[in-house]
Length: 102
Image (cartoon, rainbow, N blue to C red; front, side, top):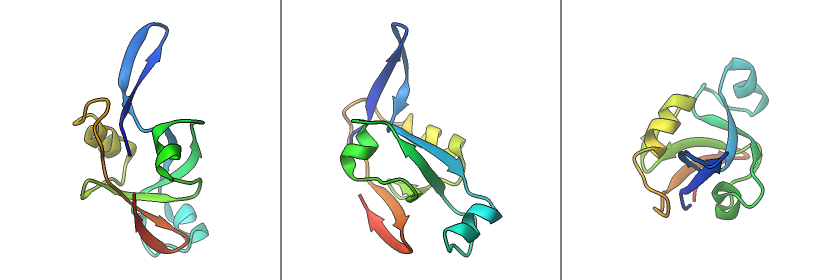
């Protein structure tokens, strides 16, 4: 996946991957047949955003970015902020119970 820079009202915001995510909790973990509250649930994707272009899908669970676990939105932001626009990153996710690397 490629990190892109978002602009809003002529200001540059943090680099982003173009996904709306929710932190995992017991209820979400149960709904997605997960045994533990690990990762971030992809709730929605930004049309033409880098996450969607890379193949992430709604209801995927993002587990790692470049081998670093991301279990909170802050952990994900801290990891993404290590990169610049145009950098490639590797994501480990769980889709329908199967781990997949994108």
